[in-house]
Image 1: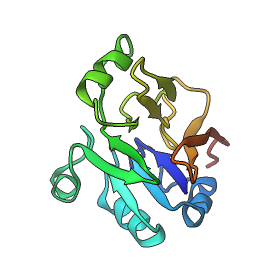
Image 2: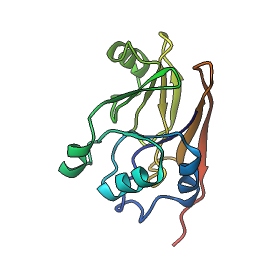
Image 3: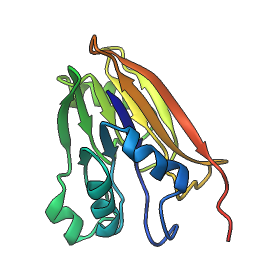
Image 4: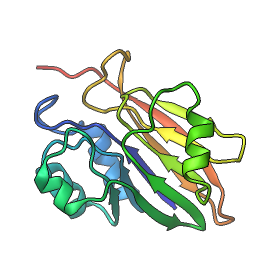
Length: 169
């Protein structure tokens, strides 16, 4: 099972549209996970129309229209792994232990908010993934998103951070 992970798209304020390389990944993904701060419902509509499955949450910059359609926290079993999705997890210091306490029943937690890619494992085995932002790189050298695979044996594999080329125009 192939996964596409993204967060903090902030459309149309930070970019007019999602980058083409990310859009090219949509038909390849069995599930798209978005960790909030969409900023517009059109992006959710686009992902729902072009993806097999969308798992998403709202973020702190999402208004009532998105909050009416999305939860604050989402959970899904994908290929035998228990995934959770949230927008904010708090400060980087102590994140693994704090999230492991908050989500003891998960295998993988996808989060956003910082726009800073993150890929660590808590002492309990909880994998924490932040795909960064494909449209608002903030203090990062590139816009980013992630892909991953859930193997037939129910393991997370091939977690890859993709760097996007700079926007032109």
